[in-house]
Image (cartoon, rainbow, N blue to C red; front, side):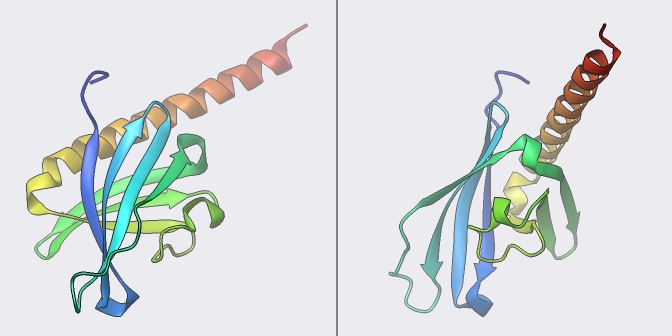
Length: 136
């Protein structure tokens, strides 16, 4: 999976349905990159400038993908509010991304890969902590 491109298109309804945030999430090394742009849904021609959020995996508690009859969601839970403050709908450090039906399998792979990498990073920190404490 190391050579596989992990990219996931997503969207979020913003400003009580008056806008839509469309974006692309990718994993680059140990950084979750969210590139996004907000478009108005009334006129359709007004767009924000593209923005990029770099979220170090050490700042992420977990990611979770879920689906039901009404759609699919990808949730990112950060350690702090500030880590995801650039996303207009972020609430208590959590960001909920809507995933299109055609991208659901990619979302499953992305969830698995990111959570595995988060676990590996935590294990590395734990092992370094033990070796520092257990050293002479």
